[in-house]
Length: 337
Ligand SMILES: Cc1cc2nc3c(=O)[nH]c(=O)nc-3n(C[C@H](O)[C@H](O)[C@H](O)COP(=O)(O)O)c2cc1C
Image (tube, rainbow, N blue to C red):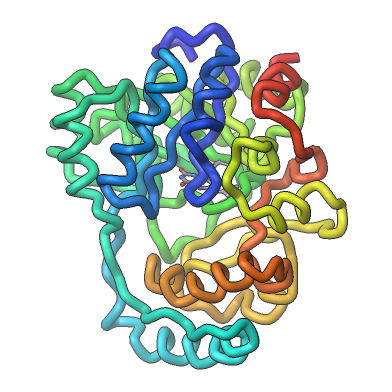
């Protein structure tokens, strides 16, 4: 990634709930760059992760934040209540209850304030626009700002906000898709197509993501105009990831054969392996994020604690077939081909 002068173009994508300082540092120490995922963390927990990463390696520090979302709590109250009622049986089976359908900003302002006071090298922003003052404040302390985009239109919006780089995310990506509008059905452009489109629309450096399953995919994305290539799912099953053990086992087992994009877990479209939860709830969750995330959180946590793969969010990208238990450095060298 030329703008942070890394020897190798392989990036470990930010993965809220799975990234760790050890995972990011392992990838950075192998010559690539590992992102710290600050989504769902408090500002204090993010600060601890940055400190832990710095203790493990001397490489640049890159942090990902979720951007604040439009609050649809009142607008969608009836469908949120109805969805919550449908979640009660699976929650009861796991000995818990659905969470309240609350909205929050994921402590975005607090995290930006901490990052302004304690600068890092790069911050990527996922799920859309932010106030221009946030971008300016971070850039003023020397931080490069990137936005996750899924189309040329979003890339132009990011450029208008002063982005220094873009993360071009294709439909293959595991976990959350990054369309800027919560109610948009994500497009089906491949990572190669999004990379070409956003590079030519803006001329900004592009980090490509989605479905990276081997060195051929890395080469294809670099040839399409990416400066660096991010993988998520391949790192998810690594020892250094904090994905639940049952999730790692499901990725590596080959038992689950398809990964679909569904709103069922969070209210935003995200790619997960098809299990009973997806079969039952796909298509019925309202597009209110993070409200739905908060409702399913106790269910996902109880399922993970019980090792119940049928009620967990088994996030995975289209390259899931190549995910293996291994060490992150081995994934970097395999991708670097
Ligand atoms: C478990 C999981 C969690 C994720 N969390 C985040 C996140 O916190 N922020 C973000 O920008 N992208 C997140 N993503 C998306 C990745 O950054 C990346 O776009 C995706 O993993 C690339 O596709 P791949 O999984 O096919 O390699 C997540 C993906 C996964 C699999």
